Structures are given as structure tokens and as C-alpha cells.
Length: 630
Image (cartoon, rainbow, N blue to C red; front, side, top):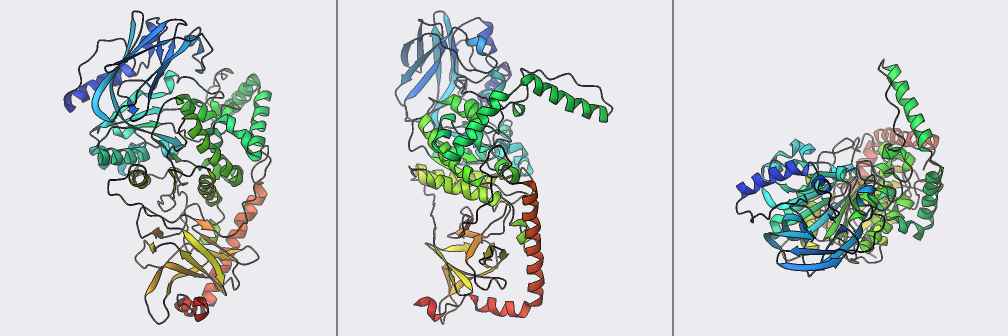
């Protein structure tokens, strides 16, 4: 909270800190209203608030707005700097532009500082007005980006996060949450209603439930391991599509995304808020009559729900970036965790080729805007959801387009020119039915393992990669070879989750076994053989190909390292390139689902009829034939 108050002494005990935090939370509910009420022109960007974590080892930029021509004095701890206020220009803060009218921007930069657990204070002065920001720490700042499964609070995770919250007395761990601030234009500051906690929230057993579930488990592990302050910026938006998360200027760099952006611009130009308000009102009134309820008031055409406004909807180009991440450009951060995909995996929205291009553009654009070409970026793959795939529904579940979006995330990351500090972490094995799976600990812990091993290093954490070297047909089966050991995480140690197809493109669940050395029962841990009685001449293989797939392979047997889903074919999801159309026509999608069910029923009949033959072939599957050694 930015307020005009006397400087406070550093907090010397956790008990006193909690009392102060409770008081700060009360005043924070008013956001930054006290500054405006005092009729001062001096403003700080909303991110500079009590309990802030500033990125260590990077120059520290502080900025805001004031009367043009004035000199603003800024003191951070013992260091001072001054800046002359630039001429007035329009400031983009949706719905609050008048509060910034006539103001110009000021900015100062302080030298980089090392991590520090000692609180410091920021004082910004213009004439006789001073804004104080207290309890600032120097540490690492990580951005949480994506949709609702990233924003999902710790209090709504498994067992309401009770164990994590009981251990959440972490005064060096904090979160700054932006909510519902998608905008059609790139914003300069964050409007007060979009500040979830009024500013930065310090982790305690009472407050930790408000943190992102994934973010909490990530940040708490990193903070405890390193002993330095960790700040999270939660910029995730429920229901958002990846299109809304890419900087607007990047859409012109790919033909697919450029065509989409032109379509959004056309919709924006044709938008009639009055007609839209009437349409919404008519629908709401009809529902009210059907339920014998009073007629609702007509929606305000100037304050429509963002979903109903082209260009501002969380489904549209750059909207979430404009108001929830791009609004922070100029701030230094340590890295980004990204977890999204559900909205883009709905069949009518599913465009994997465009998603792949957008993934690359998003990463490159964020790195450019935050002036860090090597900015660490972790994609936590599309989470599992819905009915888990099993032997009784295998083919039917394999038609779900989610697997194509998961692949697009991984390939889009691989398309980024600068591969430094990038990682794709599969999450398909954390299976809990539903739109919002309650298991978030696994995702956060895996991301923290990667960060501690690869971004920080020197803390004794392992992160070993295994790659697929080859996947080739050998007669009636496929042979897969990996760069390291691939171990099943199930007790029977039988690889699961594979399917094979012939030239007809029809995939059937397949059986898999580890290869065995000739004359020895010892299995080869980096080689797997895959066979299906229904595909005598296989030409294509898929692994873990469903929304909630079977698939039990782990890199080096580590539970935090599931092997990514993959395929050897190029039979892509039949998406339309026309952004004005559904990605796939409803009838075609139903036909795909029906065909999957037919394959399932056919396999089950054949397995029942040919049971003995199948068991005999499976028993020989792992043996390495002489011709395979040549």
C-alpha cells in the first residue's frame, strides 16, 4: 500500500510482523485511494507497494507519474536519485484515465543489489508530498502466467492445502496478485479493483491459502532451499486462451497468427456496445421470465463483461498480456512459470498449429519486453482432466484434442531461437478428474526442482534429461531407443500408454515390454518394444495420447520426470485455418468420437477372440532377435 505516513522501524519479530501485516491488509482494502483523496498528483506504479520483493542482482527501476516539469526525489534505503517529470501524455489505466490526466512520467534507476532479508523502505517525494513503501526485500521475483489452473488457490487444492498452510510461516515469501484486468490496449498502470490483496501479501498460515497453489509449492521450496526472499507475481487469468497472453505486436510475425489478429480487429471495428447490451438484456430477461423472477436491469453498454467485448475478451489477442503482464514492463524478474491449455483444447477452439506458433511468440515477446534474452521460462504442460484413460476406454479417450495442445506447447517451446533456460514439464500423469484438478503440489514441486537444479545450481538437486533417440518399425512391432533409462512408475514394471496404427491411420492400444538381451533375462532399460495384434504392419506410434492418458514412463525412474507424450506420425488435428469458423465442425468432431468408440469395441472383441495368441506373442515381445542386432 502506498500511503503518506511516518517511517516505521524495521520489524524485529515475527509476532510483531503479523500484527503489522494484519493492519496493512485492512488499509490495503482501500487500495491507493488515500493518495487520490489527498489530491496529490504524485503517483507510483501499483507494483511498488508494502511488502514488495525487488529482483536482486539487476538494476532497480522505479517509476510513476507527477506534474510535468516537477522534480521527483526517490530514496531507496540510503540511496537517493532524482528525476524530472516528462511532459504529459495519456496514461492507459482502463476506467481511471481521468485520475492520471495531465500527468507526466518520471523514472529513476538504482544500482543492482544483492539478496537481503533486511527490510528497506522506498520514499518518493514531490514538493511537500511523500509516498512511503515499507518492508521491501531484495530477492527473486517469479511470474505465474496462464489460466485458472495456475491461479487456483492453495486453499482449494487437495485437503484444502492444510499441510502446506500449517507450514506457511514464511515472512520472506510473498505474492502480488492481479485479477480480471484483461484489456484491449496495453496498460501503463493497474487499476485498483484488479489488485487482489491491495498489493503484496506475506505468507503466513492465515494468508497462504490465497496464494496460487502451484505458485506456493514452487516458491516455498525455492525460498527454503536458498534462504533468500521470493516474490510471486500472479498474473494468471481464469478461462483465458493463449491468444490473450501474447504481446500484440508479435502476431504479425506468423501468417496463422496474423490472419487471426486481423479477424479480431475486424470484430472490434464492427462492435456495437448498444446492440450487444440489448442482446444480453434480452437473453437475461428471457431466463428471468422462465424462472418467474423480476426482469433484470439493462446492462451498461460502457461497462460490459469483458467476455462480451471483442479485443478485451480473455479469448482475444493480447488482452491478458495488456493488463496483467505487459503492464509490468520495466520491472526485472527472475523467470516465468506458465500453465495453460484447457480453453485451447476444447474441440471447437483447438488449433494446435496456431497454438505452437503462439507459444514461441509469447516466450520471445515476454523476453523482449522484459529486456532479458535468457529469461527462464517453464511451461507446465496441459494438466489431465476428465475421465482417465484405461484399457476399457483407450481408443475412445484417444480422440481428445488435448494431446495435440500438449504437443504444441512442447514443440512451440522448442521453436524458440534462444533455447537457454527453457523447459517443458509434462503434467499429464497428475490425474484428478474435473476442470480444475485439485492436485497442484506435484506441478509446483517439479518446477522448483528444475529451477533449483538448472537456474540456480549448487544446491544438490538433480535434473537429468532423457531423450527419444529413435522409434522405428521392426516387422510387426516398433522398437524405441532412449538416451537413458526409462523406468515405469508402476509396480509391475510394464510400460503402458502406447498405441500403434497402420497405413489406415487407425490407432489401437498396444502392448509394450522392455527389450531383453539375447540369452539373458536382464532387461535393457533404455529400449522398449511395442506391438498390437490389430496392426500387423505398424507405421506410426503414439505415447500418452489423451487428455488424461495412460502412460507410466519416468526419466531415470524419477517421479518428478514423466516422459513427454509423443507421436511419430504427421496426422494432425483437422483444424480450420479460418479464424471466423470453429476449429472443427461439430459433425466432424462427433464422427471422430464415434470412430474412436468403434475402434475400442473392435479391439475388445479381437482380444477376447485371440487371447491365447496374444499372450504367446507378448511373452516373446522383449526378446531381441538376431536380425535386430545386426
